[in-house]
Structures are given as structure tokens and as C-alpha cells.
Length: 397
Image 1: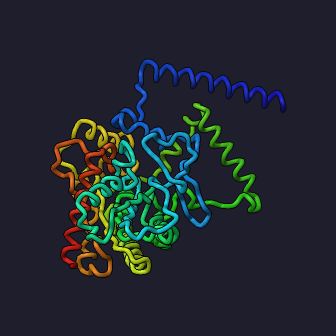
Image 2 (image 1 turned 135 degrees about the vertical axis):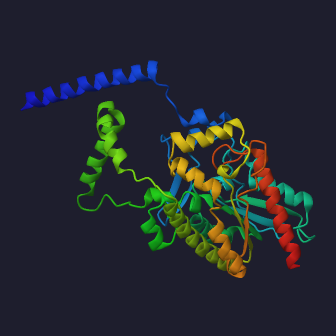
Image 3 (image 1 turned 90 degrees about the vertical axis):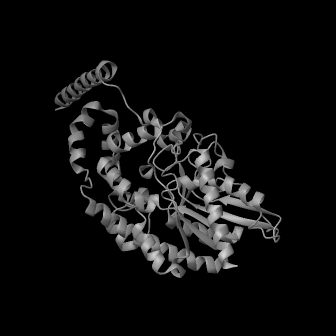
């Protein structure tokens, strides 16, 4: 029996060596290895290195469902400076200064500033400079404005509501700006639709099926699971065998009806969250402005690096539906259902503005990815936000 097992192990090692040799020769002489970096502007690569690395945790978790950036991750881009909580801004003041007009920016990675050259060239950074230069929002009541960036990578409205509940007592902001929509509605395929419909929250997908190792039999289950993962990740032979099985298990969205149903459900939950934020704005005494973010598919004039991004997500990395979903995004405004509801009852949802087509006819390069922007584009967003806020404030005076 022992000899037979040794024989099997030697056979497996021999086959593995052969497959590794074949794989080496394939990529050396016949196949070009392609990575996301090959399709994305090199000025964005420091962010990409952080996103793609699994050597250190990106997030720090608290078991109430709270997620913050891990400030001890050595791969954090050099362009990013975090405070002690992991937010991309200065530390919160220990004593409230009544002479400062406080603004908070909420949202996902675009609101956070993925792609920006530094903290000052995020939406928050630009917004602070614009407010202080123009001074219309200060109204002689404040000496200056201070903008706090409480957005986070992979963030959603649900995370923003937790942020409001647990951090706004420290800040007491006068104005809150949300820059969201893509993570919740555009790529809501990342969520299990049944869970989404039942609990009506944009949950942390990476923790959705978590179970304690103290549950009877779980330790053995985890050992088996991770052992298989180790084998698949390190064995070319094993990964090739199970590759076809993995492919068969992936369910792709095939038609526009499914896109529409998914977007409708996510939009309904988005609206419910807007209602909650409106109630919280009364409780915490701040004005809230919701801005719906743009994406690359709506842009008419693409620079070469933007065309490569489309190629990446249409063909090479079709994680959200590939070419079919790309065509759907070009022809349809994913915020249409949401906006129709807001228009019918604006007092229920607050100030909502659609920026999906802000770069539609811009002939300059704006995007690093489908939604992450370059410095100039973040400035355009901040300027448009400010103009819409000022316009609304004048109407209400």
C-alpha cells in the first residue's frame, strides 16, 4: 500500500513537472502573458499594485459589519495619506471650531480618489479649495471650509450609513456630499440577488458566508477547503483539470431583461438608503447632496488608453457581463429608474443630481478605469458639484 502511494505521488510529481515545462514553453514562445497592467495607464499602476496584492490585508474589519482601510499595509500607494482611522484625510479635530464650515465626502473608490496624484487632487481636495476660494458657501459665517474624505475603496451607501452613525458625532458636518451609484447599481451583480432583496442592504460580499471555526466540524471543513485551494493555486496539472469545472459553474448574464431586473432591484434599495440618509441629515443637522457618478461607457470620444480599458472589460476581463453589458451601459442610463422616483417625490429623497454624462463629449482623457478618474476629471467633478450646490442654496434662500 505504501509503495502504491509513493508510486502515485511520483506519477503526480512527474506529470506536474511536464505540465510546468509545457506551460513555461507556451508562455515563452507561443503565448503572450496578459495582465490588467497591460491595458491600464501606468500612472495608475501604484493603485493597481495595492488592489491586486494579497500579501497584506487591504481592510481592517470590526465585527459590527464595519470596514476601514488597513493603515499598516506597506503596499498602500505613496499618493495616499491616511488618518489614524484609515480615512484619506486629516485626523478629526479634538475640539470643535465653530468658525470652520465642515464638509464630508462619502462614497466608493472614485469618491476616495483612486488614480489621483495625492490627497489634494481628490474630489475632497478640490472641493475644499473651491469653497475657500469662492466663499459663497461660507456666507461670512465661517472663516474657512474643511473637507473630510470619509469614502473608501469598494464602499457603498450601506457603509456610508454606518459612517454617518458612528463618525458624525466627532465631526458634526454642515454639508455632506455623496458620490455613489456604480458600486450599488452599475455592478450590483457582485451581490447575491436573493440576499440583496431579502435584507435590502449592500453587504460586504467578502464576509457574507462567514462562519466561526468553533462550529462543530468546521475546522476539518476549512482544512479540506484550504488544502484544495493550495493545490489548485500551486499545481498546474490540478488547475488544468478543474478549470473546465470552474468555467461551467460561472453563470453569465445573457440578456437585457436580467440587466434591467438587477438594476431595478439595486435602485430600489438605493432609494431606501437615500431615505435613511435624509432622516439622518435631520438627526445630525447637515445638508445632503447625492451625486450619481459617471462611467466610461457613456463617453463618446475615447483616447487610446480609454479604448484599452473598454477592451479589457469587454473581452479580457468580462467580470460584469462583457460586451453585452457594455452595449447596455452605452445605450441606457442606469440611474433612470431611480431618477424617475426622485422626480416624483423630491422631498422624500433630498437633493439628487445625475453626473453620468459629465464627460460624454469631453475629448480629453478622463478615465484610468471604468470609473476611476484622472486629476483634471476629479477637479471637473468637484467644480460641477459646487455649482449645483450653490445653485440649490440660492433657490432655497
